[in-house]
Image 1 (cartoon, rainbow, N blue to C red):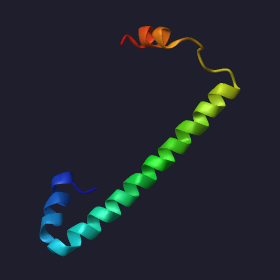
Image 2: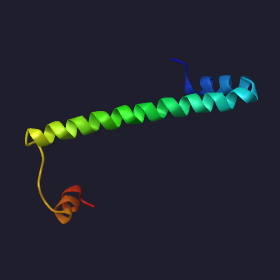
Image 3: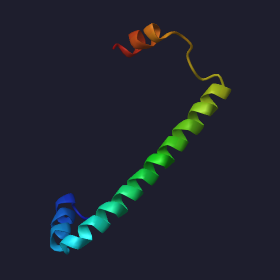
Length: 68
């Protein structure tokens, strides 16, 4: 895989007009990955709930457990 700086350098070489298209493509792909991650997290949470793999308590107990 190309190094990050190589990618940035390549982007600098493409026509300015192509930057907006590239940004749109990257944003759409990023949002799709966020959706996929959200779906997977939701499915995992549902599974954990259905199998009893969770803790019950109030927000104060949660913050204490998280040490916030």
